[in-house]
Length: 77
Image (cartoon, rainbow, N blue to C red):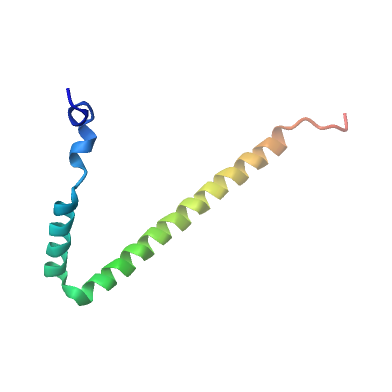
């Protein structure tokens, strides 16, 4: 039993030749002028996704802190 057959996820990792062919196809389909626009759009989308993710995470954390404050026993009693 080889390492690749024991881990089927490794079969889907592209090798160097496949990456070069894929890049050539992208250049042929979109042209040299469109690729920077596509990269900018992709970067903007990733940045917006990360901002939204961080916003939701901070809201959840602040909600958990507020709940801890409400559930904390008063030290005045």
